[in-house]
Length: 327
Image 1 (cartoon, one colour):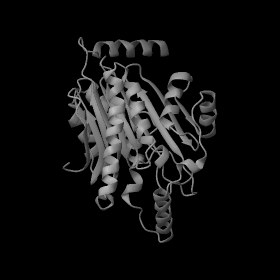
Image 2: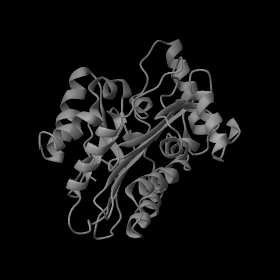
Image 3: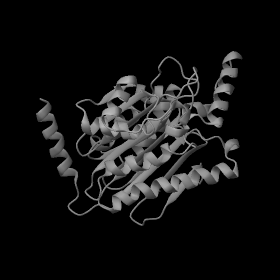
Image 4: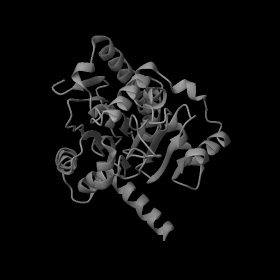
């Protein structure tokens, strides 16, 4: 049955590939829930520079004819290495003062996927997720087992001190104080994620997402980012990476629903994305955003917060970066 399903998936993928070379497209995000008052000129400059660097790095892979899955991994690695974003180096702290990171990647052409959760020593979680996809018989590895697998693959592990930044530590102290005062956490704690989606020259799609989770999170919580179909998904016609209040993306299976609307119900990408991100999720009490691309090169970047770090490059090779609504 698995072989039959895989063969059917490959057949569907081959039908969706254009007869001519596709114009490469790359879209990235660095998290929704951007708070206007936090966007000092210095921080905005740093964020924009990092987004541009990630775009250029990933798009160079596409221009060189490399597959979409390589492009999204490369773009996300750049964001993981930058402390401005809640992934890798900039991962937030849990309630116990630790960093626990999650990531996932999916190749729309083959429906192969890899995911990891709860790792504490992996410098680039997206690289480990890719290794799970490419070099293991599994889709999802967690915690110590994921790190043991990382050692067999020669993936860089670092001391936990690598992930400690003053800004993230201060955010944890503020959250702990709010716990003591029984006040609600700031919305920013729900939205720190990075991700990328891409369309390559062969018309193939891929998606990747990486996150440090929630500030002050408890009890081994895992959100939507590493869950295939919730925060990360790609098939022959649609790819999505989400950023938002993960519990609601899991409950709506947001990424899969949008892509099914596009590929099975033939809804326009922007319409399908808007319905789920700006209507279904808020109706349940959640919020956030997403980035998407389809096999025709259409892109969508819906979000219902003040802002979402985002950027995109298409056939014209121009780097586009935006942060707040109206940018």
